[in-house]
Length: 585
Image (cartoon, rainbow, N blue to C red; front, side, top):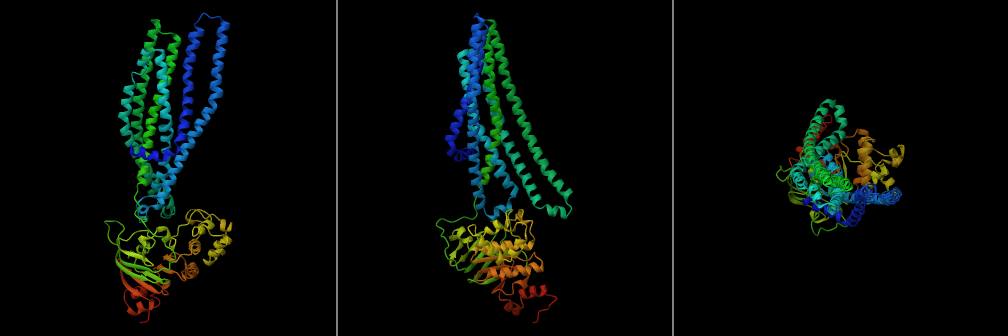
């Protein structure tokens, strides 16, 4: 029940709206409770009396006229506003929850996303949050209205015949026991079913994103089998849930069907004994429907609430994910940044118990310098640069920026000073303008165009059907690799950071695109502290300092010429890449 208590944090701001909804709901459910009394009056006080026909008709028209007014004119606005306020408050609460979850997701570290499928995250934010709406509609509104209807009906029935009322409610304890018995397992099965659905959705999301690989390797049949396996698992869990749910309905509905039979038997006996009127019997039977319809809805409600609470549990599991990277108390804002970066005895591992990928790294980078990180794949180059914007925190040692330990400054002010161009830059399915504006959302149109020109992107953008307003599809699928890179570079130009990180920014491009983008990158790197990760050593010979990293350690440091003269590991790598052009000793 801890999830319900926490859920009320989101409900509390809208309690007045919910209270209004409940009051209107009481009117909605209360009006039909008068109908059995109307039936009793018509039968006992009109039809089965010795009154003159014209008197009976006059009284019938009066009572039914009033009833028609109540049910047609009065009930319409009650129905409308009850639905309107119920949906309004529920949707406002869901809006707040999704808003909180999205804010939370943005604070989670890359480590979380590396270990969690995107589809599962989406399932919790969309499907599970939507399921909790039933808790608002059912648990906070309908259940109370059904309970109120139940007690009002019982009260009216007591005024008519206390003994018959006791017969009518005699099965309630049995009903309550059955609900309690079935509830616990139903909650567990609902949670397991939701998890299986999330896993299915996560698998589907991943395969849709990688559909080009599936088609490229003709893996359709192979992937169909994988999908069917997960789909079957979800079906099995759904069937388990359905079986138990069916048992719940079968038992509880059988119990609620016993009560009317008991009432009819005992009421008919009383009519025969002339202790009860025919009108009272019919009215009493009508109240049985008013009594046990809410009870049947309560069965549905218990199932619905079980699903909602299971979804709440999963929702709060996501909300309780710890932040690996967060601002420390008293963190300062970075003001003017010069760009001097120092790695002081830095060691790093991706998991607390995992192997170290960086070991005792010492490196000083002066402001405005261009540093190239080279070495074999898996040596730790990308891991080292990921520490600068605090995508991860060091396991040992420290990273300093202008003398500040980067853990002592706010992440936002730190990352505002860092621009990144990667091998596979993420572009969003918006217009080119919106993607460039991510570098600085407050920039003017003129600033956007200047940034695009600096990145050699303006000309190709203007050739597109709608220029800067062209929608580029998910992950920029409508653009070539070179075009995507130039949009990403324009984004960084617009940001104008003091520190630039280029991680394999040209390695996936053809030679013509590479040369064009290389000019853009050189222009971008001017007067900035720049870190370049590259495999093609010919692209980094101009660097102020080249750092060769192997197995998480720095093996060699120097300019291109110094390292070539030393004829160490860098010399061997460079020679291998230029076999057609032997290096003179």
